Length: 203
Length: 383
Image 1 (cartoon, rainbow over the protein chains, first blue to last red):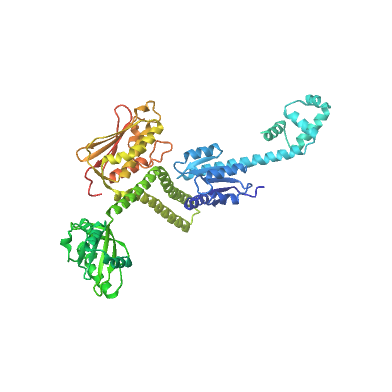
Image 2: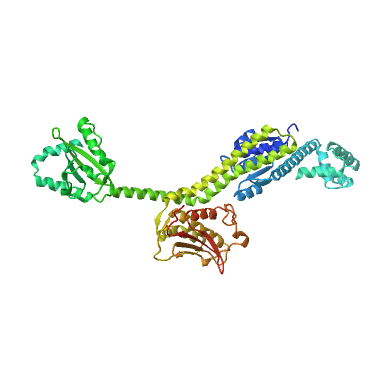
């Protein structure tokens, strides 16, 4: 799953701006790929590739805002940093409200942009880990028997074995066995860890 | 055309001389007959009125008398060429030319020429129409169109400013990013000279690109110096008032315009000056929009100043200018408006200065600001 290295995707219609951003990425040894238009980027877009998107807000053809909308519809999680010109502030505010990580007015200081990029890459990593973890937890739950799922639910609610035995009308010993199987199948080392896993998928 | 002159000549036998004379003199167009040497034989009353010569004055004189140079000295040559070769330059083809009155003034005409066959010594009939009026109205239509186009430009001044700012910002961003990347490459010890050199060249061409945008901006203001003519202050204000009042009424802010009588004319590009006034009024509106008592409105006044200047003032009752901002308001890209480009006053200032005037402002004693500019009554020679 982790054969991809995080990549900074640069989308700007201005060749010089794009080229200079590429050199800046190179100077700090960040993998990057450049695209002259939103369309070019979409044609090449791979949801499994981690990274972040540095996107010019004002472009001919599909604008940065429109690309953001498209990515939202595609349920993409790639964080977006908008780069904006003078006078694009109202647009940038709207982009932020739609979930962009940040915007940075042109021309910018290199460390301001790089800090935001590093922040976005970190966000993306956490998002992807969480997503993976969530998928994993769902897989583990799928392996539980219906009875074990019932026990899991009650355990997570914080009920004691005796109470659960009463609820399910089985012996306390049977509950203990189910509970041990649940912990094993869920690979939980403690009750706290089990609770956290279940809460994560319920979010 | 030649035919049409030959045919009446055949019918002519039934017409007596007085009838011919009446026909000639009733014509609206000037009709002149010359012989094969170019000497005037007939000169109708319309020709007398048009050229200011009486028929007696011009009889027997060379028709080149009625022409400005270069036709004047070439006409005998044209005539000889035609008689020698039959090669017609004008006969049978009406065309625009210029003619010269007795007073020396030159005016535009449409000239058509027909030939009167007469063995080896043909005569020529010239019909001449004065098109001074037509030319003038063509010119007026052209100017009106030009003015409309400029008004179009006026309403998109904000958009133009936005796109100029964007165009300047792009190369600046590239230069700034290239140089910072180079610094990082050099500091990291991973740089190679060829790459740094190539990047420096790119920086140079981006700096040129930014310069080009600024040259265009200067040109935008400069190019229209040719559009200057003498106008009355009333004319400047009259066209503007309608436009400005719409703006002000939209916002519910009363606008009063006061023009002192008997003001001398100024030599200006009317549309540019209107741009400036409109810009100042719009700034005034923006400054008043959040005030409680904006029914006090905006006043525009025009008066004579120091005997040799016109002073135009735009007084608002708005929020005023802070002490800190006072020094900066004419700087390009300085703005206090959330959606402003910060170019309006900078452009206004270059327009006024290129007219030899001054744009400035004063704080009103009570509330708001008065922007004013001057225009020289006699324009400076060294623009």
